[in-house]
Image (cartoon, rainbow, N blue to C red; front, side, top):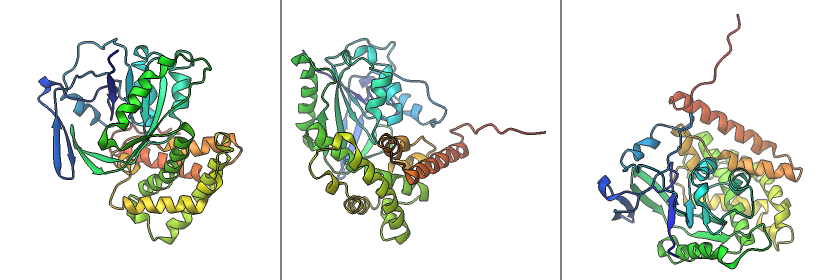
Amino acid sequence: MTQKILLSINHLLCAYTVGPSAGESVRLTTNGIVDAKSHFDVEQVQRPRRTEEPQEADNDLNTLERPSASSDEIIQNLIVSVKAFNTVDALKRVAHRLTPQSSILFIQNGMGVIEEVNDLVFPDPVTRPQYVLGITSHGVYRKKPFNLVHGGHGTTALAILPRDIEEVKPDFESSALYLLRTMTRTPALAAVGFAPTDLLQLQMEKLAVNAIINPLTALMGCLNGDLLHRSSISRVTRLLLAEISIVIRSLPELQGVPNVNMRFDIKRLEAQVLGIAEKTANNKSSMLQDISQGRLTEIEYINGYIIRRGEEVRIRCVLNYMLMHIIKAKGRLEGERQGVILPLATRVSG
């Protein structure tokens, strides 16, 4: 069977590539060298825009040729890299094309998406596609539609999640293995396969870093490097990490894993935060970019995930809870200022 990979990126739900008749190409600049590709197969599935989202999402759509009808062709492999809060909406529109033999690679910021997808899109474990999880440290930003810059070289970690059902036919995982091999054999991705428990620990490390750098830079409107060498920021960081550390070390899925307490110790997590802030000193965090452009943030899937998992193990993360709601309030206020989000109605007494 011929394997195909359907890519889902940015604010589109399915293919975000350019057709030959669109007169466009995808341009990726790496170390000053431009690599332009065109004549891709194009398929779009557009969702209704939410009131919290900016108008710019449709600008990219206008440069693509619109198909007359959505395809019903089975999707063997689907890569999902939309914002975490758009994942369920995206998958609902192609769920009928995904089978137990299909594979979905989730490569996104934050955590908690898989639980939402299982609850709202694929509640039956028997008919659920195979999941592959991934995290990446590559840095890419968009200059304009179809013009991207690979600004930071990193690595990609991947793992095939075990299924919830005991008896699975061997060919159920063939597409997942194909997807994993394809990713790891692509030199530019620097991708490596991991066991699920090992990837989970990598996810938790990245989550802890993001839970500090993203909201603090968004709140203060500063670059990542501006968090360094400031005593007040150091104190806030340690207080937040105290909650994050104890939640991660208390997770039932990590009990019995060697060196978990040492790996997620507050001092080690703080060193990782400082290391990433220094390495990306001149970068704007994704959360700062989202807030400055009036877009929704992924705070619910970063600090919000820590809060929810803390509640499960009876740990109250009051500082992360406060920070999450400050970010949500700031995001709504900025969205209202830019006219992206409709202001809340005010009650007039009289």
